[in-house]
Image 1: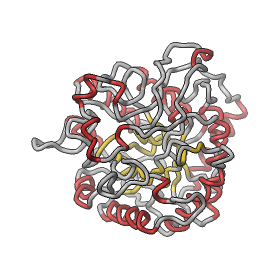
Image 2: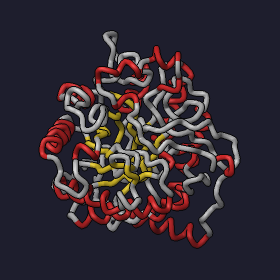
Image 3: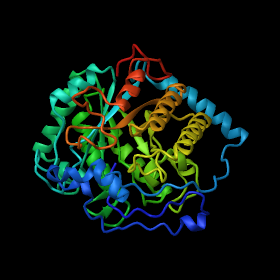
Image 4: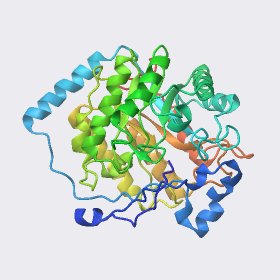
Length: 419
């Protein structure tokens, strides 16, 4: 979700050289929805119609560059098959439930440091219980690194950790799997991960401490970082490996979600981009337990940014899901679609239904998905709002409810399996 940078012009159909002119604003000025609840009206449909550039989903343009050369030779294909079989065999019986649910926003909102229930909020028990009763199995919970660890390499902040603990407990009591998501885009207080100011060890430190704190909660899923966007893909793989090593050293055995750079878009996963090639370089992710999946995000609007109600790029988005499914199958990996959304326009609801149907049709490749976006602080007319209206569930949620009730088993998460 929202990233504080200037949106470049749409790059779809351009050459790699043209993509290299992609410019981001590194000043990291606070984006609209991080200014507290009192300004939430800025995210409304009314302003979207007047100024599409002011949507809260401030992702970069995600054009498709020419695909990279296929890396798999016959020998590597055999190795991938062996790896896939070993990965499934290594998973304990019933290691995960099928992860189908929504993102539950609030804790990632507002200026830093912010005041809880004024600038940002954690979801209420009632909101969580409602989601559990709808038949879903997972909730992705975004939160901010700077609030949880106010000083780099320092202790976790007691009250913020208590809020996170309480929310995780409520999610589990509702019969759901909590996916805790470090929603920071590869930054901490305007410092970029991988720089001298913010080395990979900093991410390893916070996740090592979270892993030690939560290692006895096996149902929890750790999502290492939301949508890093301007970090080289090979460097990003190494940074995540450092965090994974710290998590496993702490004795935590939870399922991990790793992502690619360039926002982790499915549509550009195997493309050569200015920041590298995720499909090539993210194969370098290493987990001693082989208990991880790749977190992809995919929106339907013209530049795949998720800040407009139209869905003119639905065909490209659906092709991106197909391409990633093939990539996962080829390399014996697993995926999770951590963000996607649609407005209530009929053609967008059709694309939404097609997307989740594709995911559920490839259970050996996809652990599941989490749609954007639920949360009490979203304006009533926010185009991706999944909270109910006085008249009942929104059209988007009705589409998802069809899938929540279709409990299909998968290779590593089945109907009877409990994490």
